[in-house]
Every structure is written in structure tokens, then in C-alpha cells.
Length: 238
Image (cartoon, rainbow, N blue to C red; front, side, top):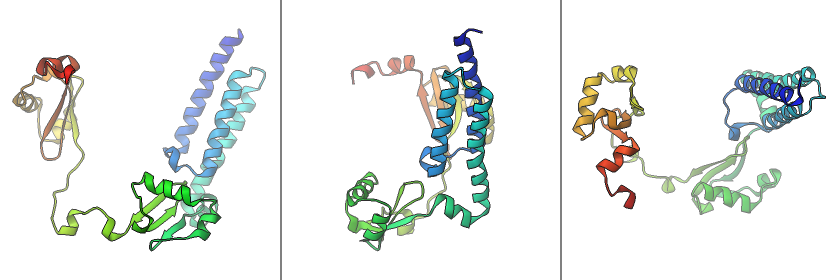
């Protein structure tokens, strides 16, 4: 078998293997990975890349190594879900950096965190004064959580005793010329009712690329590009 064909076959097999491993490990975002899980991800990827490019390496042994490296974090995650004490040992716990507006230098030195790094993380969260912070902690995934003092928090409806209607996420009703009948049924509509609402906005259904409806019954539409220029002839010159 030619070397290039062998490399292609090995690569495809490894991609499938990595896909299966990723599905087994779950849907954690990169920022939510623990330090150990991050190391495992790098190692498994390196093993896969080496196996794909080096035909002299045993594919069987390489896959066995990947399975072992992948099984360990899977086992740790399963045990962590059942044991809080074990979770603390493996994933660690958050470290308080600011409490009652006061920076805890001892905790920052413990985490090898400088004041410049702390100020930078605060700025990323649109906080420019340490005095505005009631509480801040470094979580186990490396993210900084910040709670502003009550006087510095954005005003909420509940603060001024205004009762608001609950609003759910908008629902897609027309996507690339295809009606989403199950969503229309959920909204108590049919295709005819939707067509009428689209026409009330001055459009025809065949002109609409995407349409969604919010919980209040408001319809929002997005036209195909070729129809935008028809409705707004000077659109490209704005």
C-alpha cells in the first residue's frame, strides 16, 4: 500500500477516534476545562498527530494509549460528580482576591497573580476601579468572577418594583425558504397566517431568507441579498 494512502487511512481513523473521545468527555467549553483536562487534550492530540504522520508507529498501541489517556479524565469526572471532597482535590477551589473592596495580597501571591494581572482582568469585565468591587475570586478554571458593590450594579426592574412579562427566546419560523411547521404549530400559526404577516411587512415569502417570531408575536425577517437591493436601491452607497 502506498505511504500516502496509508497516511490518509490512519488520519481518518484517528479523526473518528478523536471525535468519539470528545463526545465521551462531554461538552465543556475550553475555558471550563480543568488543568488536568487541558493537559490530557494536548497529549491526546499530540499522540494522534504523531500516529498519523509516522507509519512506523503501531496504530494499535497508539490507539490504546489514547484510550488510556482519555479514560482517566472520564473516570475522574465521574467520581468528581459523586464526591465533593474528591472534586476539591482534583479541580481545586476558587481563591478570593477581593473581599469587601479590599485586595487580599496573600491570596494573590499564593496563586502567583500580580496586581497588574488583576487590574487587567477587571478591565476586561468593564470594571476600572477596585473600590467598586465587593467581591472577586479566581475560579478553578482560571476565570475571574466579580461582584460589584450594590451602588455600582446596573439598575434592575425589580429594584424599582416594575413587574415585567417573562420573555422567551425567538423561534425560527422560516429558514432559507423552508417553513418550520413544528415551530409554527407551537406558536398557534399555520403557513397562511405567516404569509399574511410577511406580506403585511411589504414582502413576499420567497424574498425571505430567515424569519423569527418572539414571544410577543413580533415577526422579524431577513431578506435574501438580491431582494435587499430591490427594496433599498441605495443600500450599497450608505
